Length: 238
Image 1 (cartoon, rainbow, N blue to C red):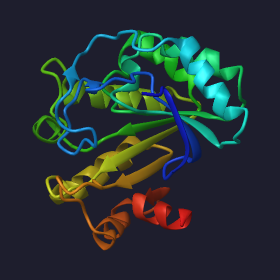
Image 2 (image 1 turned 135 degrees about the horizontal axis):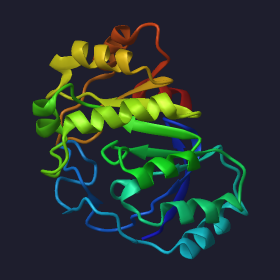
Image 3 (image 1 turned 60 degrees about the vertical axis):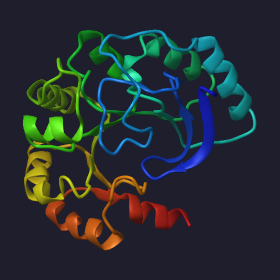
């Protein structure tokens, strides 16, 4: 497995080089989301660990960046990226290779930790998922480790948006299991006040996603906000 992959067209952030600070099979995460593209198995942990060496990441990134120009480095991969204990060291190693923005896609569950809060400053763009409005929906859709609660996660997301000087974007994954809550989810997102909103839906046959029309219709619920969907952005790429 490679810790650095791409470049590829990210519907979120543009022409991206992916960085996976976990790089493990099975995945390492603190959630078991029903729609996860990596499946519902994997290793569930809540403590941070060192999964890849920063020198290895730098070497793999340099090999690609010497040949390719990208818009952004997008940190995401085989689990929650903030579980990587040496994430800051990885970022620092890569900053010497490029001056493009650094973005991270996170499930938001670790944003309340003091060490993670310091590392948020390493990123120009933070994409945080939010698929529920209460504890019941959180446990049904995201299936967190028993020590993780929706209340604490939501509070940490609010604090991150209030304190961040960069873009903090909320991404909502709509599927058949939570689309009935779309009104309430949109109200919560509006109250939180992110810089942008990304709407997605599962792209795998195991979990029924929404059609382009169904997802586009939900955009109206977020009127007045800067919204994009996986369908509209993928269409632009073609």
